[in-house]
Image (cartoon, rainbow, N blue to C red):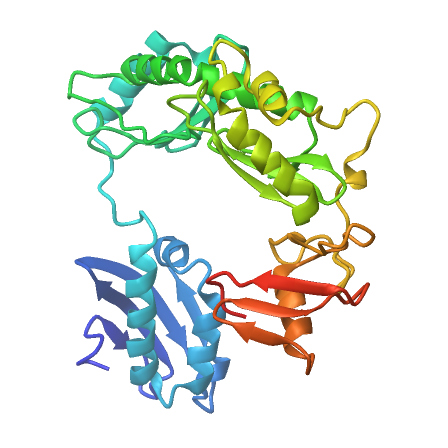
Amino acid sequence: MLRHCPLLLAQDLHGRVYDGFISLQDKDFRLRIILPADLQLQNANIQCSWQLKKALQGYQQILRQRLQHSADLPSFMMELKTILEVALKNTNILQTAPAPQYYSCLLKDIEDLGWDKLSFVDTDFSTIQLKIEDSSGREHLVTLKLNSRYPNEAPECNVDFPIPFAVSWTPQSSLQNIHNQIVSTLESLKGFWDALDEIDKNTWVLEPEKPTRSATLRRIAIGNNSSITIDLDPRHPTMLPECYFLGADHVVNPLREKLNCNIHLWDPENGLLQNLKDVLEIEFPSRSHLEKADFSMDCGICYAYRLDSAIPDQVCDDPRCGQPFHQACLYEWLRGLPSSRQSFNVMYGECPYCNKPITLKLSNKKY
């Protein structure tokens, strides 16, 4: 014990009570261990200082397991030091406390910015959440994490933007500077969010179910078992987005042809939704007359819509069938059929529903 924990000393002749400190990373943590009369470690009573309890929060189950499997107290103390070292890497308990001017400077910056622009401040004044409204009335939340060297070092800034965002900072900067930079970026993304908000409001978006402000993709229902996925460039929202069609070939192939033939009709002066209608020569299903469930058909094999995070994205090409399947489900089905065959990354077999020929182009995902 003296070699591993020289500051943890026995308090009685029987070696049942130890009191002192465990040292790690130039810090001493108070510890008291009381062993039962039979000296069984699994029944030991361990008392810690609040700093040590805070550092080991979330590791109690691991500690109990180590306590049960350790042969003696020195081996357990080695296990404890190993766990504590890992725990300290994931906690700010060893961070230097901010200087008094940190708080006076931060409070002045908050006063200058306005308390009404804050939606959250933690008890340590190390995490601040700003609420900022753009010119279209959308509210954005921005999380700032400050270290003890603020304002000499820039806060860590977490924003839900579709483009990289980095704060421009000098020791003379303040929260107002960050606020101004964010507002400027919000305005540069206004057209991008306006276009996607129009899509969300007027079409049935199948994915993502709850889009974040950083999401550039929308999968929009066109009809039963057919949809289009658009990937909008945040910096050029008025330009033609990347488009991917999903559905049976006899449904989506004509749409691909229209897209290729009508690209010249794309007008940056028109909205995204109107341009999609003009180029594809379609009307998207109305939200006022149809429900999302009308387009979200379950997989014909597992009878579920979502499999982990995947949705049914393979469709039987027979017009009289059109049953959708998860790629993983269809792969397992075809692999189990003696009549199925595979050529490179394409599997050929029969539809589980109508027994008509069906093909499956395999992605790089392994099953």
